[in-house]
Structures are given as C-alpha cells and as structure tokens.
Length: 497
Image (tube, rainbow, N blue to C red; front, side, top):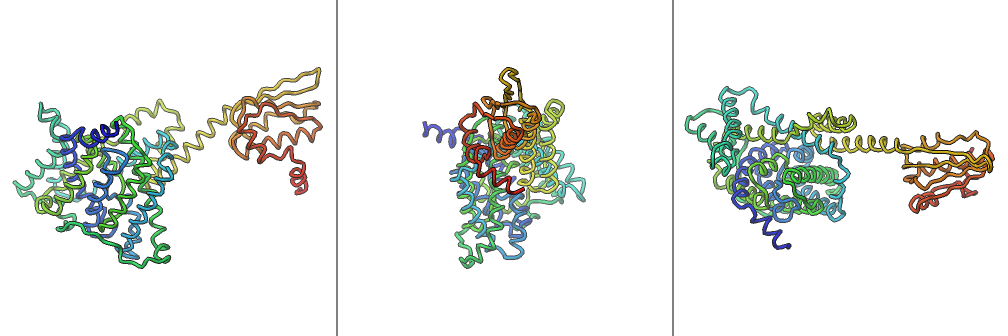
C-alpha cells in the first residue's frame, strides 16, 4: 500500500508534472531574483535557495504538488539582518530557521492548523491574491504601450488556448504564453523589460558553504531574533498553502511532515549559499492549474530552474517580464475566492468580519503571520461570544421543603460566567439551594471563581448549598481551584478585606 502511494506520488502524472514543472521554473526565476533584491543579497542567493528548497521538499515534504522556494514574505524579514550583519549571518540564520521548523514538526505544531477557521483561510487567500496582483504593478507603470499589449496578449493566450481542440488540453497555456510572447519580442526586437534586466543570473552550480562566523553565544543572540519569526512565518505560509492545495486537489496532506520537510529544506538551502524560504501560494496554484499533481512537478521545477539559469541563461534573459506578469495576473485571478464575495450576503456577519479583517491586515502590513493572527483571534472571540449565549439556567422551588433548585445547562467559561452569576436570586429567603450541574461543564478558573462566588453569596444569606451532577472533568478543575469548600482559603479571602 505504501509502495503504491509512493509510486502514485512520483509517477502517477508524469506528463502533467513535467510540463507544470517547466512552467513553474520559468515563473520562479524573476520572483527569486526580485526576492533576493528585497532581502539585499545577490540574485544567485534566491535562485540557489529556490532550487534547493523545491528539490528537498519534493522528496521529504508532506504535500505533493506544492511548490516551495524563496519568498517575499521571508525576504522582508531578512532586510535588517543583511544590512547590519551581512550574508554570512543570513546563512547561519537560515540554518537555525530550519532547525526550529524541524523541532516544530516533532512537536506536532502542524496540527494547530485545525484552529484556523475557514473564514481566516479565505481571507488569507484573498489577501495573497491582492498582494500577487499588486506585486505586478511596478512592471505596468511608466512603461510603453508594448508592455500593455503584450500583457493583454499573454492573458488572451492563457485563457483562450485551452479551448483549442486536442492541443489545448495537452500543453499548459502559461507555458505557451511565455514561449509565444518571448518569440514575438525577440523576432520584432521590441525594446521592453526582460528577465535579464532583473539582475545577473549565476553561471555556476551551488557549492557547499558553512557560514564563516564564530560559533558563540553572541552569534546566537544576533541570529535567533530573526530565525524565530522566519520559522513562524515560513511554517504559517507553508501550512496555509498546503490547506489551499488540499482543497484544490481534493486530497489530504501531512502537516507535521511538511514542517519537518520545510526545516530540512531550509538547512539545505543555508548550506548551499541560499536564503530561507517556504511554500509559495502563487507558484503552487500555477503548478496545479498547469496539471502538476505529484512530487515530480516540484522536483523538476527546482532542477529545471537550476539548469535554465546556469546553462540556458542567455535564452532565459530574453523572456519579457510582460509574459510573466500575464502568468502572475492569471494566478492572482485564479487564487482569489470570488465565491467569498457572493457569500457575504449568506454568511454570518462574524464570519464576514473575520475574513475582511484578515484581508485588510495582510494587505496593509504585508505581514501574513499578523493577518492570520488577527483573523484567528477575532474568530476565537466571536466563537466564545456565540457559545456563551447557549448557557441558560432553569429554576423551580419546592414550597413544602423550602428548597430552590437551579438547573444549569451549557458551557461555563470566561465569557458566560457573568451570565451564570446573574441567573441566581441571592436575596430570596430559602432554607436550601440545590445547584444541578448535570448538563453543565466548567472550563476555566473564571468559571470556577463564578461558582465559588455564587455558593459563598448564598451561604452568606443563610442558605444551605448543595452541588449535584458534576461531571468528572468539571469536578477535577473545581476541586483544584475552587475555594467554597475550603474554609482556610475562604478565611484568606475574607482576611484580605
């Protein structure tokens, strides 16, 4: 069974994976160069990183068909480090980033993805689609009409080519777009910006490099404050992208294995003179839309990338940026969840707020981790508020025995504890109060404190209080943190006044 699964991952879609890998490699080149420039390092640092990370995650990553390489989100976090300490410290930080990600994998932090709601994922996807589109705008401002004409022609090829009989379905339209637009630009010698204008391509294969820095505690103090956020952002973007690719392909993936795979890939990148990277939603969407499904497409994307920049650099330099802009605009359009706009009317207001706030924070700050954090926080608060409304209290009085019984139904925690206390009539003169907790559950110390408060108030009014029906989990937390049955604790509280 395992052998069949491995065979399917590698050889289940050979032709589709080869063509998709080629398209992704072509689209990776300008991005890797651009991200190197953002980080303030030589273009070859980003290109070597993209090759290394793609190849390693293809082999040991947890999500077949997902593309990992040097990314803008990671590059932004490296700027200050490179400026203040130089390349060698960046390579050391990349190694530490990988180590932290491997630890996260063994701690099974990938499982935390289940706490990210669908609204946050949708907001994250929409924000990334907007950022991908915005990243193309510099290539479309202050340029000649040729650039616009070629970009529009490229989009026309991408969207119309699949309608051609036979050939339309067998060759990825983004690849056709890049080849045709390049051929037109070269044949007519049109003077427009090309990949070669982005930066110098490397002409040698990467070599093993150990960072040339002292292995001291002072070095750790310099690199750790950069490695930790790099590890967090890298894992967050990778796990979110894996979730999106899961949806696109209707398959599952191993998130904890992905954490370890990303970590090992970053260590490999650091040792070959590359920067830290993570999964790329744009490239992953290009891969899926171009027919890539297995590990072979990710492996070949890395290998093709290296072959093209090292051995075919003169050809690659001539690819017009307009062709790649057209591909990235297609990615932006394909990534955006257009259904989420339609769903704004149907979905609850709280879900819409979470989605929109995630988009706003990510686009405003360009910080994916911060956007997801805000989305998860808002979703948690809305959920807590919603659950607190499902708590209610029924009460009845036995006049003959002078006993008032309160039946508590629902979840008692920090958000519902005030409502819990407000349900009791402490001024009612009764001999005995029974609090029936058969259908209630206490979750935290705030709820335990609320129960203490209720019991002590009744006793102060002269009523006997009996708690019945506590489940085992609630009983454990109340025994540990409750004070209403601990005279010495009550005295401490009273003595404090």
